[in-house]
Length: 402
Image (cartoon, rainbow, N blue to C red; front, side, top):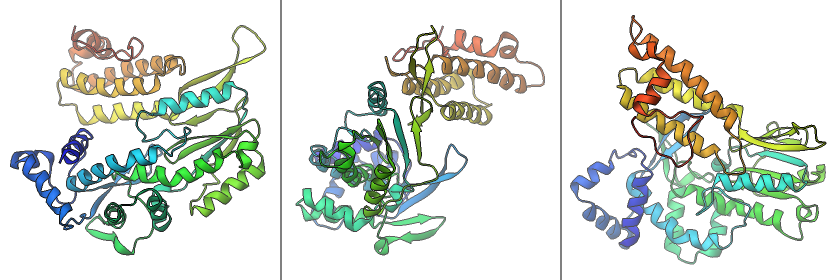
């Protein structure tokens, strides 16, 4: 029962909406959490448990497109989390140090630090790789073979297979199910771990001392299905070998989006950060590496703020500041990596945007200019209600009402 209680706590902490059955956390707790978890335990012990269909919704992407997100029921998420808690340590013992996504005590910041170390050590060439729909194309049969090599419990393997075969419900139409042979639904609790288990083959081959990659000093930095190869030279032979490996894994490299770059001359983006070398400002014959939020990341936070303000004009300044601070704080915290990234310029740009946006926002709220508009909305909200000034915010600090 401990695993189920802890799994419930973690699933609730991740928030998320109800699945296809419509059952919410509030409803579960109002009817009795112990009884709910006891029933799950009973279903698992008697092998009566069957996962429900996964509700699929389309969420907007930064490029204007949309991507699918699967929402299992809370019950299915609890059982998946319990399973993840059991099997994750087994596979963590095998994983390479070059992967950072969805792993305990690892983060995007660690991946960025690693890339900086490689670039500063003299590696020049980058292969910015892009996998086409990785989560949607992982073959079930090969994944199950990998799982079976480390998991001996057939009941656990059966659970995972059932989740992979769960039908998808979208716009009142069903797809997938038992006939489905590929894909791990994005949004599922256990999907990132399953993807890491599968892509570990790629990591292992590249890091092997016998591989052409290792012999040519090629390193890989991977965060889930995003990865780059980095070395002094990335030849066509290296790229062809990579494509051969991915073909064997039944994964596809998007050749249009995959780029080979020179770190001394070209900028490149990874996980929302922009890497670019600049000439020394003091005229020295060397370049320094600047790591900062990419243009796309800056555009995303501005869009996020704009959409929030357009939908929440009726809310009080106190509520607006609270919600805005969560967005600003999260963005700055993500892009601030001590002694690694340099977001100061981006923070000044964000401050300028907030100043202009909030002025226009309060100017439009009524036919007459509101008090906030006349006083300078941004600075007034900073002084009176504790709105975060991006140029003065320090990671970890808490803002208080003046």
